[in-house]
Length: 172
Image 1 (cartoon, rainbow, N blue to C red):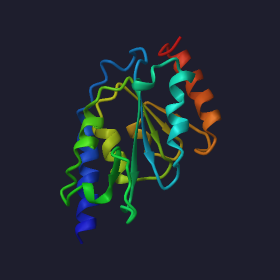
Image 2: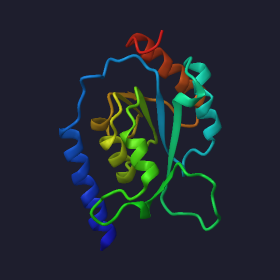
Image 3: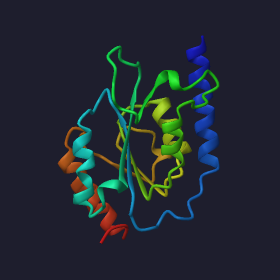
Image 4: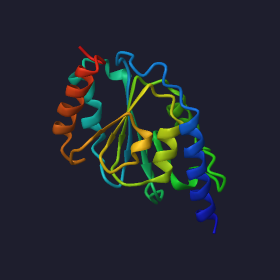
């Protein structure tokens, strides 16, 4: 019962966040890049950090945050990880690292997941990112750009994203 309440609260939160979104900085040049990843689908985060060189960014300017539905029994050293239990039944987030990630003003935030996921959708909707990029299959209301590519084809994704960001004058 609490899970249903949690998901309903998250959907309401998403709707509210979509209405209050500030798009005044949507055309700013890319200096910071964030990835919000569904860890059940993609686990090779080092390849995402390598995007810094590809987009001419400093390594410190690329951040990756992951979501895992159920916390593993094995201890993890990842502190940039979010779980189902980090949200209460009202849909409120209780993970300080996740709150900092959401509040960071990324120039480009990539939602690196393809299925409907209320937890990741709520984080994307609540994010202060200027420009949001998603992969086809995700909720189109949340993103400014959707790229239709297989999530496991990271090289293809990086190439497509670079092409669009160049056209939009976010990178040179």
